[in-house]
Image (cartoon, rainbow, N blue to C red; front, side, top):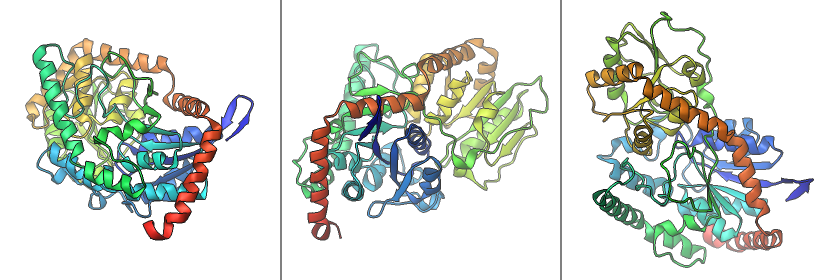
Length: 455
């Protein structure tokens, strides 16, 4: 690490996996660090190569770990839309990406560290291999969460079901039971994780959640104003605010205003990845067909090429820059992906959320909690969806709450700048001499074990 004045010039190794909504925040972080003058490398799927270079990073592909060549549904490793329920989707994600390939992810990262040491490893909150590599190499490791924390903060309900904060003894019992089930689900992959740890000469863990605790800092790319209030936020957990990098395929500008300026404008957007959302999208369009609104539906990569019958008041776009649309929108109908939710709130636009899994139930719960929109079951009828949109347009409290959250996010400052400040602070808080020793040890480990352990 070199220092000019008070600004450290860091060597940062960032990692990412092709999961759709997690990609733009990672690229936003990479861009902000590179523009600050830091030397950034990104280990990621080949899908991100051009975007990484455009953001200012040197790109390194996954070699041993899973690596998607494109963003088609066919290349997706998890394919959670094929699963019977959310738990089955979670298990498939752990098996194929999050925990199962941890040794392969770690080996790729350690190879990159051996080729060039780094001052900070910017890992992923879901890639256990990135946490493992940081521990093996003894490199200061910060984990980037592209949304809310998957590990509950004090006073928060467990991640996944979309619970509201507990208000009664029954709610607290509910949370305790769900937390125990979540721990059991994670720990079902503990043998795989401990096998990877043993491969690198590390002691076994008693629980899977102990692995992320070995990272020095957790950076949440969301706003505390959006999240549930916490009894306390652990010192290693930091809110940096939303990182709203526009996907490279969604930068087409929307220049045509709605045909009838007097009619409210509604944006409909359902995910950057496939979740089997064609049916719910068709119900949304049917539900808005009879409403006095103009609607724009953006398909994105998830539904590229999909052909759906479109009512007269609906315009379907393959992709478009959402900021242009949100500047005119009075309501958003969405699956509840974190990026879409944050971007809508930054524009002060309330939402109807039909969560379809992943982090979406919990995002919808926060929209509900703050009164910034309505949560519906994804099986909701067209009539129910139309009624929900009508409520958002007719009851001013929803827009008022959305605008209040948007103002709070703006007052906190830009997420990319806050992330850079946290990474720099984290690096400066680490002892340079200790890091130098550990980087040498990581290189020695890699050299002596390459032939026997990796190839």
